[in-house]
Each structure stands twice: as C-alpha cells, then as structure tokens.
Length: 230
Image (cartoon, rainbow, N blue to C red):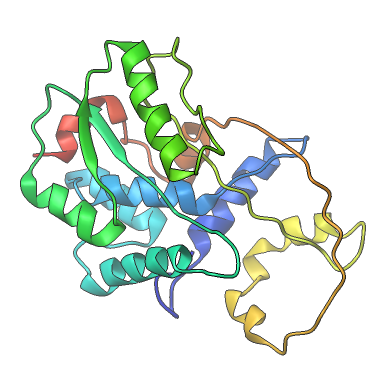
C-alpha cells in the first residue's frame, strides 16, 4: 500500500505475518482491501477507537497528505490500461443510523467510495443488494460475496497478490523476511522473465478480529457503529 514515498509499511507486513503464523495451508489476502475499509472507519472514529486505528494503520485522517495519497493511489490503480485492476469498496450501514453529511463527503473525496443505509434485518434483500453491487463492480466476475442466509454484515472481499521467490523453495525466506522487503526495491532495472502461472481458484475466509487485536486494535466493534458517527 502506497500513501506517499515515506509511508511505513508495518501494517501490511504485520497482518500478513500474523495470518501466516496461524495458517498451514495456501491462502490469499489483500492487506490493502482490509486497510481501506479500516481507514474509512477511522475517518469517522473518535477517542480510543481513532487512536488505535491511527497507530496500527499509520494513517491520520486529519492529515491532508495522507488523504490525498489514498485518493491518488486508488485513481492510479483504476487508471491502469495494460491490465484491469480495480479497487472498489462501499460502506453499508444500518438503516436506522443517521450519517453525518461531512463524513459521506469525506468517504467520497478520499476513497472514491459511497455509503448506503440498508436494512440488515432482511438478510435476503441485503445480500441481493450487496451482491448486485459487487457483480457490477467486477463485471460479473464475482457475483456473490454475501450468503443470502447470513445476516452478518461484516464481510471482507480479499483481492489476490502473488509474490514469487527466486528459488522454487524460497517462499519461507520471503515469509520470514517480509519486514526487510522495501517497496523501493522494485524501482531497479527491469528485466524480462518467463513466468508460467496456471489458472487456479482459491477461496478462504479470515476472522480479522484476532490479527487486528494482536496488532493493537482492541476497541473496534462494527456493531457499535454509532461511535463512529458522533
């Protein structure tokens, strides 16, 4: 995740290592997807909630440079022509909660996103609305991220990032040295390689509460969203 050239990447490294430590199977995770959702919440948070998220995410909602960096990053991904990369996030909040207009505007201008009040008690209609939005954003490639029978609204869609070691058995080295990997390293001299990546499908779910707790976010509870909208 790139906010600016001096951005601290501890969040991405930390959440990856926390999940690696508790998984023995192959998995996919996008720290960026989770970070953007948390940053959107952080922009409306106050008190200890805000301090915890600012500390872990290394993101200050009051810092105009941080906000501009987020918007520029999202625009950069969405403008890629050679291949299709699109970032799409949207907040769904219980219908009986009144949202501050300033917060709605901030989410739009910083994250190129939107907020919609929705009736979570009607799980089938809720799932249909969210799934329809997701299908439209992904050109029908992902048609269901919410189970119609599940009225739990706190779901995360993870995008995939592939990291390839130089050696066939070098993945452990990468996992154990994530904190030493500098994004600036990719700015070196480009060279061509032959890459054969077979088509595959992998799905997994993570409870982000545990790794986020381990990283220092304890008070965040999306069921008490009112605390974010005061």
